[in-house]
Image (tube, rainbow, N blue to C red):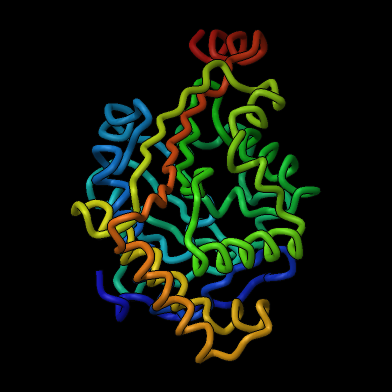
Amino acid sequence: MSPSQFKKHENISKSNWHNLIIDEEEISNTKLYLYSFYEYLFNGKIGAPVHENLRNGAKVLEFCSEGAVWSKEVAAEYPNSKFYAIDSIILSLTDEIKNLTLIGCDIFKKLPFLDNEFDYIFSTGEILFTEKNLFREVLSEIFRVLKPGGWLEVIYTYNSDVAYGPAYTRLNNAWNSWFKAQNIDDDILKNFENYLEETEKTESISHRIEEIQVGSDHASGEFLLEIVLLFYRNVRNEFAHLMNISLEEFDDLVNQFESELNGKDSKVILSHKQVLAKKKCTHSDISSTVSSTK
């Protein structure tokens, strides 16, 4: 997908959304590479058991979609289903996709959908980069609009507890400082399932973790390194300011970081997690279904 397929959409609200990458072309590039990596890693674009439902015709929401890269590709594969991509900052597609609707709104308030509207909700890690005091409210809204028996799928990446080199240590410390400044709790990343259980809305929760060593020893590690480098080069202005160093110093630091990861002694591992949760059906849901069939 070319960055030229995107155009700027109205910036609805950034008061609670801490998006480090603000250039629209770089958003589309980063998203495209990341989705391609996840597709390779988890054997497809969709991990939830919803393929038959999508072929027959379902309603799907991509939450925190930005460039709607995932929605555009999956909507083309399942023309009988209706897809909605929602985010605070969203980039409109220049080419029309009949079964895809883009919506820009404040995702930290009540979502503009009815209760129990979607069969399947998909999101990448941006959902977890939410202020700690807002996260449970966001999760509650997601389950409100998800149908009983519907599936939530979230895929994201986080650091494993391994020894880093000096350059990566500095960058990792900057990440931790950014998390703290934005009131984001990294416990959500490591223990997302616990927060899902707390909602008492789930019938089942499962996860799959793939750990990949970053670097050039193998194809997946090399591709992952390119994604990580792309990300850091896209956030250079914000991180250089956060670290109180010049842009040139930050560029040198990223180059050192690249050398560390390509070194034979590098043991930097990133964990990639796919979480699936099925919304439980209550007695009232079952009664409503029975009544509607009479």
